[in-house]
Length: 101
Image (tube, rainbow, N blue to C red; front, top):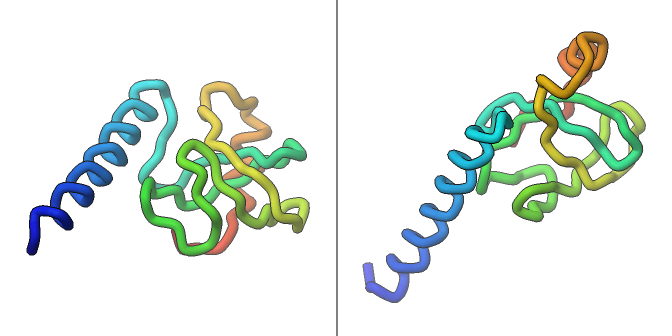
């Protein structure tokens, strides 16, 4: 493989890995089942694997994807579970979107 192809791939993988580590240090559980909040305030869980998006539009720290609670398309962001009430955490566990990243 040519150096022109390898260098950008290494940079992208490094940025994704670095962003994931930074987010985890800040208390976000990226890399699996994550609680997110849409712009209308609905909370639900989704699979959030940095760099892997099959059901939404990735905007680095946010996504545009379908909210299964309000049944609308919205910008969603990960939420630290520590910032949620027990009721919100339970609601998010009970409401999932599609089981693909």
